[in-house]
Length: 222
Image 1 (cartoon, rainbow, N blue to C red):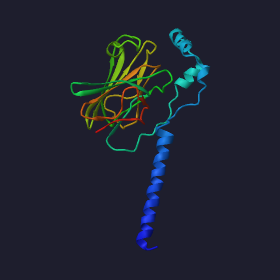
Image 2 (cartoon, rainbow, N blue to C red):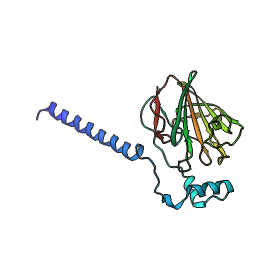
Image 3 (cartoon, helix red, strand yellow):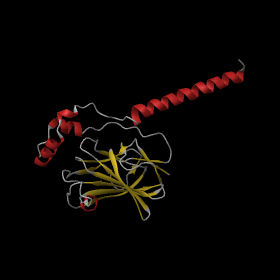
Image 4 (cartoon, rainbow, N blue to C red):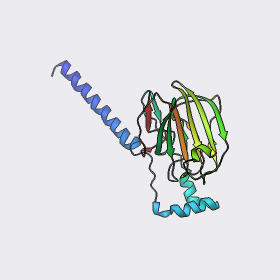
């Protein structure tokens, strides 16, 4: 075998090994991320909702709910990642913006992540009601916290919205902070809604009813 043939074999081997690593990354960390081993029959959803309303939540479930697994942001350029676990309930273009609404269930991780690197311009609390998430007006009238970022694609907002059983929202950031994609943004205390507001010119990649995972699901490119 001559020298050129040996080099071709070497490059082919390296390429095959790289593809294998990428495949393992997607299978283990992206396509099947962080699904905890849980005996789902242990908790009855209706009973849990009653406990939430009465303030007597099962301590074991509270511990499960408060989990905060590590997340690995995909190593790709010009991407925007999901700010929250959940499923995409609605995608809407309005004026110059794209609105992506993600609904969280009580089974989802409730730590939100920064969707794109930038500078925090403001963190605003918008007082309001605590309508049930089944009420279409809850995204407009419910208590929410709006984090506004200045990014290389323009202004981006993450809106953490409370629900009937969700009365507390935490934000870990403040105006002036410089944040990276995938950094922890905050937490909603028991299920509700997160809305991501982007400039309309981005190429969005997700669809309604799709499952998302904070920091790992790529929802748009620019």
